[in-house]
Length: 165
Image 1 (cartoon, rainbow, N blue to C red):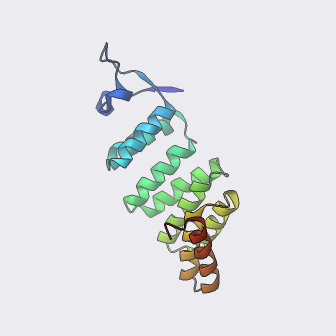
Image 2: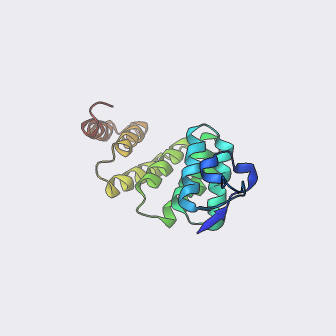
Image 3: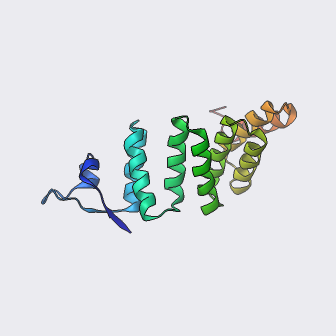
C-alpha cells in the first residue's frame, strides 16, 4: 500500500518528492517506516511520531509502526500510552520478540515487575539468544529480590555478548 506524503514532511528528498516535478510521490509503507526510523535516530521524535501515525492510518495493526510509536511514547515518559501501544503490537504480532521485550521495559517503568518478567520470558522463548531480554530479565529478577535467577539471566546475557557484558 502506498501513501502520498504531505508537503510538511518532505524534508528527506530521497523519499519525499519527485525531482522532475517537485510533486509529492507515492511512498510504500516500508519506506515510510524507514523514514520514521531515520527521524527517530536523528532525535526528531515529533516528526518520527507523525510518520508512524501515517503508517497506522493505512495499516492500524502494523507491528513495527506500533512498536516504534510505543518506544517514542516511552522516551517522552508517557508510560501508560506506551504500554497500551506496545500491547497492541504484541496482540497483532505475538511472535515479535522485540515487542515483548519493549513492553517489558514499559511495565518495569510502571512498576509492574511481574508482568515485565513474563514479557522478557516470552521474548526469550521466541528468540533464545536474545541477550537484551536476558539482561532485562536479570534486572527485573533483581528488583524482585530473586538474586539467583538474576545472576543466571545476567550470566546468560554475558555468555551471549561477552564484549558487551
